[in-house]
Image 1: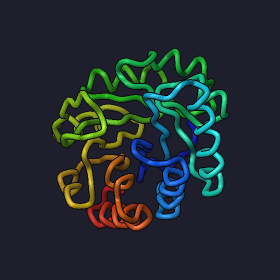
Image 2: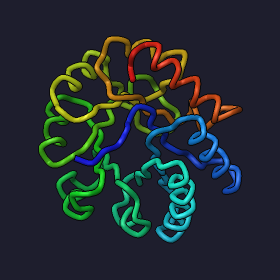
Image 3: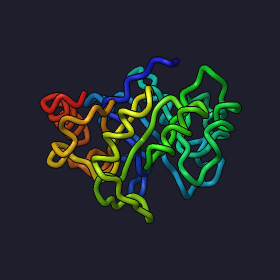
Amino acid sequence: MKKFDPSLYFITDSTNYTEEEFLRRVEEALKGGVTLLQLREKNRSTREYIDLAEKVHSIARKYNVPLIIDDRVDVALAVDAEGVHVGAEDMPVSTARKLMGNEKIVGATAKTVPWAKDAYEQGADYLGVGAIFPTTTKVKTVLTSTDTLRDICNAVPIPANAIGGLNKDNIDVLEGIPVAGICVVSAIMKADDPKCAAEDLKAKARELKLI
């Protein structure tokens, strides 16, 4: 299996930022200790997505952090990203694995134990489980209980990360659950200082022994 560190997984959102400011925030987050970076762009053309992904990838490489492309295997392959993440309505994990090959990271979303087991059996390398709290970054938010999160963590041998409205002030709800890490969007993306936000999240997660 590929080696990667899912402990602080940052998912981007370029909405309302100039490209310059967006790239600056991504780099500041990487400076703050982000360990896995996902570029998520729902509304760009393929050409625009590839162009931005190339720029983000060049920054991520400076910090030796793998770049995961949300949803789009074609974009991931075009920029030679380290991986792809597929959600419930995207292509099947098995298809993503076949297209990406065995050396790349394939992540999947899971909200139930059967779903998690199925994703693992299809070749997923990690799972994103949530939403733990309501989130402003997706139109459709289906909440996942911490009990279900715990069950998923115990049901599969691959890393499972909590996602959904998490920040340094509420991640204590994960205490005692064997997550591999936390996924955040707004907690870093919308912070006044993304570097400090990443550092604070990591420190709090360590304090709670989540990572």
